[in-house]
Amino acid sequence: MEAKVYKGTVLSVEDDGIRAAPSDDIDNVSRRIGLAGYLTEPVQKGDEVVYCVFPDMTGLILAKIK
Image (cartoon, rainbow, N blue to C red; front, side):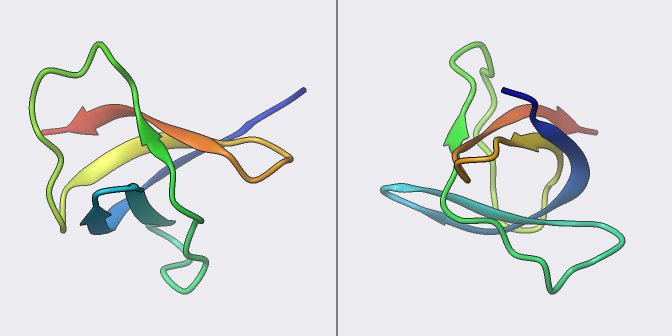
């Protein structure tokens, strides 16, 4: 199963997941995706991140861009 990897912006952080959108297509909002367990800093609305989305529309925040 191949995933698409995006550089984008966190639009919301909720109890059941994070919504993000690609930097070059802010209207393409993801479904709620998870946060990789190795990330130690909290992710907040407005943060730039690298994330992936799988064909079944699940996904994962892979890194926070500083």
